[in-house]
Length: 195
Image 1 (tube, helix red, strand yellow):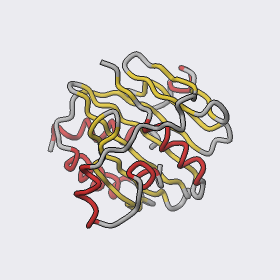
Image 2: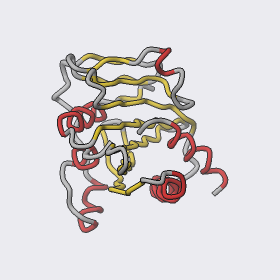
Image 3: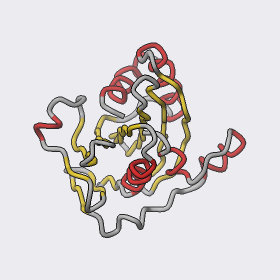
């Protein structure tokens, strides 16, 4: 348990989106579909094939040509440790942060369970939505979604272990913004950790 805490703290450190879990895995469903979802692969986004590329030192992703902008180094300076890039909608309706950390010391299931335990204790208006293991073009991942009920914000963490490193895509969307949720899901599907 002790070795997991730094990873969990890093995952919780940044801003984090809803509807994205459904959009990433292509449907809602209950626990009956969990095994099927865990073994299915989410196709790479073709919606952003002509989108703007954000290229980091160890990754790349695409985002819509209009309505989104990259965060500057100054913007990222106040974000959580390990944040290497960020995007925001120009209307401030959504935020996506890319974080890079070390190798996970826990399974994806253990990470999701630890997140729930910690968030229940630390976030007074926390309401769990979903946690699913998915196969993204970037690899196996867990998507963890929750709502901040007082601020009407839906938050999502997509954790992608990649060998000796882990990427986390933290997203937050204002409640009720289906367009923003759709766009964030498409951005996540384009994430490509470069070797």
